[in-house]
Image (cartoon, rainbow, N blue to C red; front, side):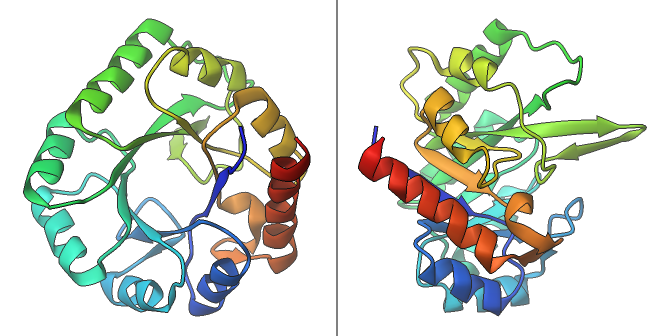
Length: 231
């Protein structure tokens, strides 16, 4: 496969939006009112980021109501919405039926590699199929990381078990969007093992939380584009 897509997620400031827009990425990700993330921004900042972007913007939401999505769509006019939590397929159906031409991505989370959390492949595949039936346009596999009493969904800097990702999507009519701990050092392995449609990165191309590292952003994109050319 060639023509891999790249989303740089967790954009919090105009300088980083300009960086990502000019670096060869395909999408920029903006977290809107996601209280569990240090990369979240409010609606006013999200609007300014969307206006500055010169590539499609994906707006990420945590357990939104349909009304919140409708308001965000009218104000921000994003390329797509990405649902991050335990949103039900019925919400996807409502979004797709009531907002013309809207694109919806859904995040699902696997345990980080090395954490002993059993994954029932059959149940997870059934869940993916239910979202596909609801009209979702993409499934993005990210990582959940448990430490002490806290649980972090996405932005963990941890990889999941990529063999499990491959197994989950075998013979499904849905391309894999892969997130979770992808770096310039391992992106080639991620692509060779999973063959995803899209690579999604946030924490591993930062110099501090919420602030991107230009060298890491450009290096990761350069590696992916080189793989497209030479395999």
